[in-house]
Length: 389
Image (spheres, helix red, strand yellow):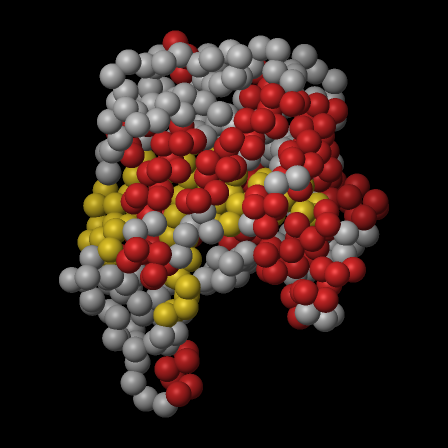
């Protein structure tokens, strides 16, 4: 069921969160190995980014290792690689300083993945920052010349939630292409395997008649952002099928290009920054190899690339305990390394991608179960992303 909001406006606040929290047992282990926590300090970067690139190994220029209490390198990485927000001139009257303060930065973020990505989205401030707060700004007429709808759906409302027609004949996944779905979605066409990956996003369309708030000073801040989470639990899957495309990846890329990236919205907001990840569900596919997985990740990223302003690949978490689960530390580390190698071999992908490696940190942080981290992990990681919004 969609909730519809209509209004316009000026500004959304920039939520800057302190990422440091009191150390628990896991953080004490990390500090013993990696030193004391460090806070975000962009001003500490010496020289220009171009100068740094000339002396920095390729891997360090586009990827980094993130820890909840040690992420300065990742701070610097995204600060330099993310495209800037779209800056609009302020409309307030008065002196130059007042007009500069009224300048507006617009940006959109979309997260794609399985339940590990969705838990970060739901159990951090991301859902509030990208959906609830912008929805409030809509009601306050402070989100610009847009008309917006909040989208949320369960695991069997994928096409309906996006307003996409169903394929006349549902095509089952091809085991030779290592496509999902594998379980529930394979037995129930149009559904996802994952019960905890429900799509949830705020979608806005350009409305030139909505001008309320564009010239007022009552809107509080100078940064506006919206976005959400879209289910994509495999690197290649057939959960969303339409008459135009068979795969979820192709359908969502076409959807974002058509609905989010209209000429008017591109001018006002730019393309969304896309945060993606895969692996935990792909590894359940029969006889899949690292080469098969990387081939599908290449398909996923090259398909999504035209719809996104930047691709942030969020690496897998893992568990160091012995278990019957196939998502072992050795396997997930191997897949992360292979994805990095593939992206570095693709100049177009490398130019607009960043890799956030979290696998080492996940070994020393509490887990909720063998696959998922505890809620504090997702809260910290989500707050870290918000620092760039």
